[in-house]
Amino acid sequence: MNCLIVFAHPEPSSFSAALKDRAVRELEGMGHSVVISDLYRMGWNATLGPADFEGSRADADYLDLSREQEHAFANVCQSADVVAEQAKVASADLVLFQFPVWWFSMPAIVKGWVDRVFSRGFAYSAGCKYESGHFKGKRAMLCLTTGTASTLYEANGIDGDLHHVLWPIHNGILGYTGFTVLPPFAAWMPGRVTADEREAYLDAFANRLQRLDQTEPLFFHPWSDYDETQRLKPGIAARSGVQWNQQTGQTFEAAAVDFSRRQAVPPPRG
Image 1 (cartoon, one colour):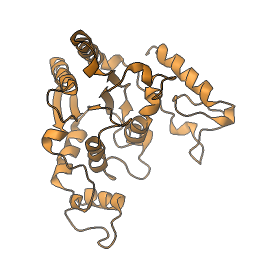
Image 2: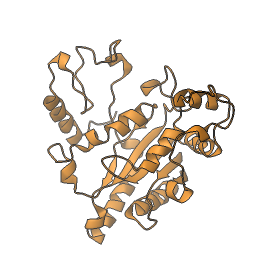
Image 3: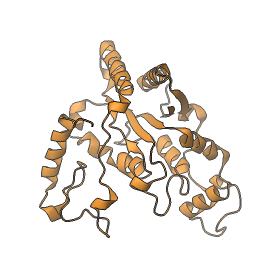
């Protein structure tokens, strides 16, 4: 299996870096190949703009970024750094994103990597989204560190359920482009726990990587569950933990409780 680790932390001796190093060791130890995009060390330019398009523009007078991305991809005139990262993604069977949670999301440098690398034409196009996305058949997973305890990210926690917090990434980036999305791994406030607890995080992460093939992916409703307005059909109860379907009489609270129960007891794989 070819693995790409997209890593973002400005401090090389951070616990995020320790998780990245453990991932490399475990994956290579299982016989997989690993490529790393260390965004801070690379000096990755996180700003999507005119410099991404090195050839003739689709419209030289007005910058429509999605149109220019599609044009540049089709005409092989994207900037060299984007082309290099897209080659890594194209070769990868698994893409592992490793970063600290900043402001309930990914650091800007990771979002900028997504903005530029997951360009229209390469990562998605008309009619090729979600279960028909360009990255169908690839898997993706987030490995996170937080500054606060796990209790804050529970359903009744002040920060909200972790799956709700990560929905824009899991659904809006990874699911949207066709990835099979594996449940995230989180190391809770590693800067405020003991050395033994940090070591336990590393061991737990290694165990997760060793069991990738046995891990049940996150659930996303297929196209067939949606009507022509791309809303869940009247008879379909939401199962994602973030959506709920009023047309079934389902409430947000009931959907959230059902999701929590299913997460507590993962269904067996066939």
